[in-house]
Image 1 (cartoon, rainbow over the protein chains, first blue to last red):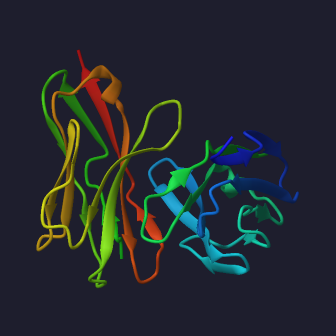
Image 2 (cartoon, chains in turn purple, blue):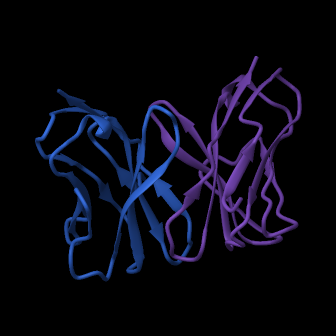
Length: 111
Length: 114
């Protein structure tokens, strides 16, 4: 099916563990984004990518790593998870100047 | 500095009444777009309406309209004839064409009362 999919939908992990959240889109959109959503903060941009092998930091990049070896995939890795990274994570994609299409989100709990 | 400001954390509106959700923005880029998204309790992000910085007329999409006042840097969402299904979080966002980043506000929780 065409669209943007995130996996897993829910994830529980422990502090210090590495976690990777996956994002896959089938539209061949140039741009992909990672946001985290926390109460009182709205959606905050973690990283975004303009094309394969081009990534840039957003507002809150510390503690996160991204890669984009293929246009359709944009995984987000928490190298050593902390409790403050407990959040809902949204991936989105778009073409230049266009609206964002969002995935369903990943609810991550770090214990 | 906050690029997108939504000053109303929560609002109530009577069913069938109109409601305005406020959004102000800050940018030095002359080319940008403004978006509104709805997030119901189920969590998905639903695109509602878009306004480009060069658009002469206010955008409208069904019961949604965007009151765009460029000089004041405001982009308020107006929902006419509110329905119970409009109860949700609403986010304003801006995309500056130069950077292509998309910045969101903190959101307004709208509750429609029967």
